[in-house]
Amino acid sequence: MRQSRTSLKSRKNNAGADMNRFLGLLVRLKWLGLIGLLGSVIGNAYLRKFWLFFLLGLVEIFSNLSASRQSVRQLFSYPLIWFSHRFSLPTKENYAADTDFILPFRGQWYVANGGMDKKTSHSWHVWPQRYAYDFVMVDENGKTHSGSGRELRDYYCYGQDVLAPADGEVVSMACNHPESRAYGDGRIECMAKDIRGNYITLKHNEKEFSTIAHLMPGSITVTLGQKVVRGQVIAKCGNSGNTSEPHVHFQLNDGKSFFASAGLPVRFKNVLATGNGKMHPAEYISKGQFVKNSQPGLDFLHNRTQD
Image (tube, rainbow, N blue to C red):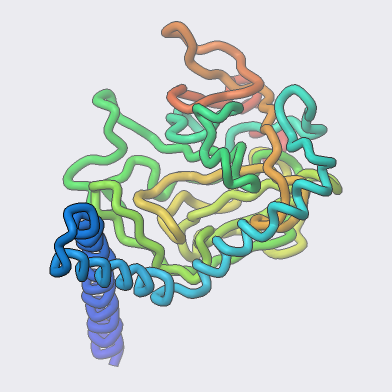
């Protein structure tokens, strides 16, 4: 019986993978609509009909309506964010977080996305994620994975412990979304009905809420309403949600909502970052840097979590 159930689950997974490959093909075919643009420029009526391929873009929307609605929700939150901040969004210059954060992992990682300005920002024009970070682990050649990168276990950060970045309370979470596939070529897939995939949101005070996203299914070790301490293991790095490969997504907002609150600059404590070829203490970090928690900070965390 157990074997037949396993076989059935395997067939379902294979069927789901085949459907995702088919949908991915349809989404890529939409770019044939660019030939319609050429047809309009040169006045060729037959080529203009290629505009119809753009309709395949609707497949991308309707194949995951929940994730599409979340993206729209972010856009409609802009007026609320704009007015609530009196027409001036938070910056490093006009806002200093009340909470000191550590990096939500052990060891040395690489900042793949994120920073304090438009050039380095994770998503400058997506206000809730303006100061978000994406962290990965890389080898001496700058690669994030061994092998082809088509297996999640190929990625160095996959399955690594994720730590609470500061003391707080778990106010929102999801733990049962499936992993997205990794293709090894940067293609993005979202198997979950939530772009965050499995995630944890922590309330640090009334105006500071951090979220860690794309966690491994079934790896979350905390519960809703639970108090956590800085450095506590709360989950493992995964590849759930809207993602191209395993990584840790970390952001700070001024409200509980991931989609309808302003992103805040993250000020770190006991963190080292690369600069001029050396590691140095850093409160603010940026894309392209190697970062790690400093040893004094790790000793402090170990003592606290053992109490």
